[in-house]
Image (cartoon, rainbow, N blue to C red):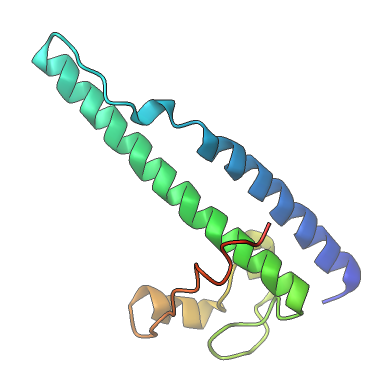
Length: 126
């Protein structure tokens, strides 16, 4: 990848990181509220569950973005973490935080490849 392409991906990743970091600070939607009506309480619980799932999804994406930024810094960005082949430009444009090529990602999704949880290694990446 050229320096211009890497700079473009860095800008995209940093913008997405800032967006998600701001969204994760707002946790008002998961506050447990009491309602006088049982149906209202069930509805509030459903809305809270949805908010928790969204928060979990955003947290996971933020971790992936931080890992991608770390790969940019160490020079391994754009290379599949499993087969070590280049990730296609089309995939990188669609998913700039991709850590695996399409073939390996499909294997990860089917749990055919064991993925090491590296969240602690990148916890302090900003």
